[in-house]
Image (cartoon, rainbow, N blue to C red; front, side, top):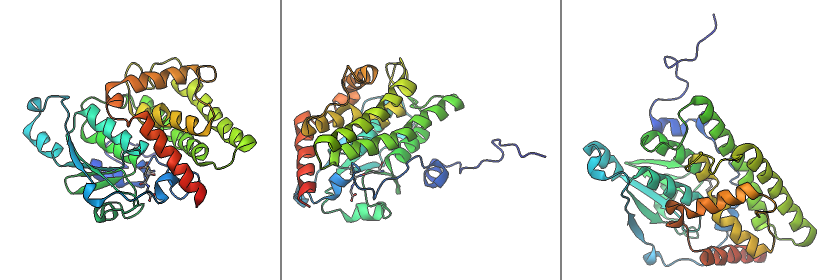
Length: 297
Ligand SMILES: N[C@@H](CCC(=O)N[C@@H](CS)C(=O)NCC(=O)O)C(=O)O
């Protein structure tokens, strides 16, 4: 007798927090220790920020109005904290998702050159931001956090309802893990000339597949509005432009990737993106500084 996979025989825990810890749900193929990943910029010593200057600001949201929510929900929402780092595309993902859900949270800026005890306690495995704290429960890895947010606050859904469509969305999110690695390789590639061109070509090739087979003719991966796939590719919208400028190469152009270029433009115009991404000159200065520090090491 064949075993039926049904709600009676769940293969993942029911509780969203327990699910976020289940290895089968981890979408991220982690490139944590891989050279040339975006993350390398953050691991290299950065001029230490004055610890006292570390700010913890309360980010408020208005969607949906809190008054319309159940008091229990308001309570859980007030217990949300996000450890992030301002230039990080991984923290941006979480900020956008929380804001789109209308979840109130406290933002804590982490100094990655002098990590706080809290970060080391909450993410002892990778010791990286972002970390979301819900009540007393820490969740690490941006793609896992996004899934947790979607499951915990189902209003304003960011994944399709249909299981097949959801699987397709997750397929493209997973594909993006490789794309981010290609973007990281271009960002931190220290050579020039032919080899730099090669890194740019590799990124272009993976983005062409994303454009043709993932985005197609849609405005966003989510259709008319942004979903988790769009959020996961957020770095293409603002970070890549800074890398292109710093490196003097162009990858995402109307002539090479017309639909993805239009997507990036549309994404950057969304209020949740526009209002939260750092100014382009600051990102450029950060990317250039990180490249120079890496070159010296
Ligand atoms: N795979 C992780 C990557 C997170 C990541 O690379 N975070 C960087 C900042 S952008 C970090 O905390 N780096 C510090 C370190 O590597 O020590 C995710 O998606 O959350």
